[in-house]
Length: 212
Image 1 (cartoon, helix red, strand yellow):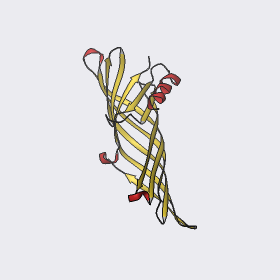
Image 2 (cartoon, helix red, strand yellow; image 1 turned 30 degrees about the horizontal axis):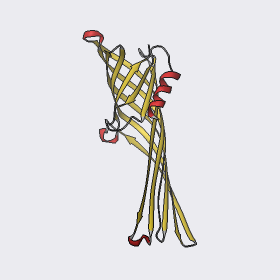
Image 3 (cartoon, one colour; image 1 turned 90 degrees about the horizontal axis):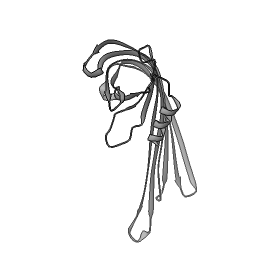
């Protein structure tokens, strides 16, 4: 699925000079965050898409199979990011490579949901959580451009140095005890001012390929 999306990005957005990239976050899992950048010389317009998803199910039986307990966890999320980046301070290096700085600003939006349930004993339980997030960030970064096997690549480090974030959470809880059913819910929202925080995932390392 990840590589299908990558292929679609390259195929649907073949604009001359645009950059298509993925975030390097793990060497054991396929990437889940993608970006397209236009007008490389600047101002550079950026559109990003984040995709996450998890499904886990487990079934346990007690001795003599008198009781079977099944638990299930589902999680998914979608994020959309946009930014305007301005390259500055370019320094040419050997063999067609160069370094340059980046500064920019842009909004983002994310929605995520999770469902956690356990059935088989009394009472059975299920909980659903929804979160909406939106924000505006300012960014600085460093980009290294280099050729590799007839490809024009960019290795880019970008960090959010300041921003504002809004979150809204909703939780629904349900339980069953025979034919008796109970349910409840809660919601909350909050605004946050954010500074530089590398532990919050605000630092991103990205690999881009330039569309010829």
